[in-house]
Image (cartoon, rainbow, N blue to C red):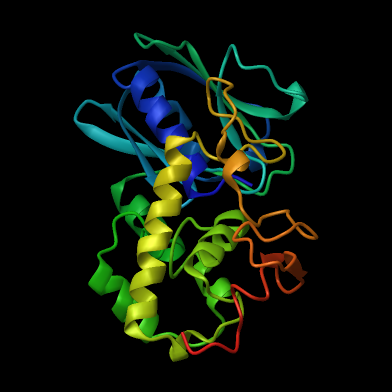
Length: 279
């Protein structure tokens, strides 16, 4: 479930609590939890956490030792979490990695992932560059308006799947795609190549507003998401359509929120997000 806002919350907490700390030990409970770079694991012992970056829904921890930089990239996937040691989990047997630190505000960082759709990758700089190029499109928080317009005008297909295509726009998943499209008054199945420039700009502004608001609320704790310190994201209280099937539209148009089953469930208002209106 973690999407861009949740991953951003994680990255910010890690910066506050662990930047400058030394990694003393890294315990890996399952060999298959490390996607690549396992032979380099011993290098990280004694290295210092120099930086934390978010790429899409993934977190990259940058470690430095003797003027060399290497990275641990944690994919949050569907159920992956990075947690401090005091944060309780329902199923502790799914903690597959433990990193112990000295010199930070926290002494341990754990990678919890019961369904194991995500993995860790141990990479050098060139490996990180390849990883990013292979997996991530533009970042919706940093892409410029003009670049976003050009990107959308060059694409075809339905709007919601495009918003969720990680190699095109990195970080938006089902929850935020639903919320963005409702606020932008666009049907999930709208054909991208028929959007006017003004409509794309409205979509861009809405996308940034929704993601920034969600980050300020700590993300959305739907099902299993917790920040590293155990806090729940409160943006779920501001969801207007996600999971609201059968409820009255919050725009007070008199219609009910409907659910459209496609690749992922889409929640929308048939009046406010009509696919027939010339937008």
